[in-house]
Amino acid sequence: MPTVTYTAVNRGELVGGHVAGNPYTILFQLEAYPRTRTARGTMEETNDGTPEGWLAANVISWSLVTDLVLEANIGLWEEFFSSVMNGETFVIDLTGSIVAPGPLYNVWMPDRAVQRQQLLPRNAKYAFRVQKLP
Image 1 (cartoon, rainbow, N blue to C red):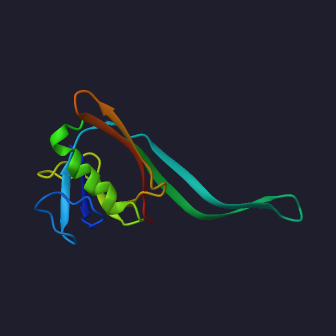
Image 2: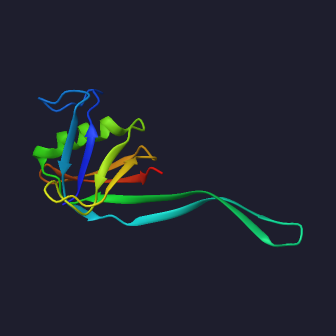
């Protein structure tokens, strides 16, 4: 199961018992996590017509959609999003678990946007994009 580990920031959404500045980990299930690779740079033509490029960055990002988040865990997710919405970085493990970690990626949320799909009775799903730091 994937995990996100973040440092709590008090923006009015701290879960009871959590302290700003402390790290917390959420274990969750993903419905989907397509990966995108984008090359950023310039492509120009030399005097003889030969294309010449300069690669500034190779950006990797994932569009994540959580599986069902139960009502009891919605507050934890809201704390997480509140804590990372201002460009704060966090760690994500897409394929492992707390017991058997997979590759860890330092990421941030470049769009600073989260879509919350409210499901009945009081459950939800979240969709958001993370970008790997260079």
